[in-house]
Length: 66
Image (tube, rainbow, N blue to C red; front, side, top):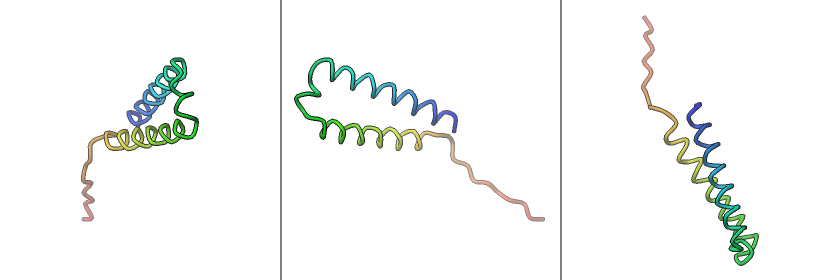
């Protein structure tokens, strides 16, 4: 679980950097705030899906009832 949190924090920092770069170059003004928010929601969703997928190894737990 700790790696998933570290991945998400890094991903959010990456998204913030991309958003600031797009704002600084003026691209965000040309596409509008609605489409920028839609893109941000999609990017956050993809980041969550990838971090959960890579959150650790999957194991089968066996219970000895004897």
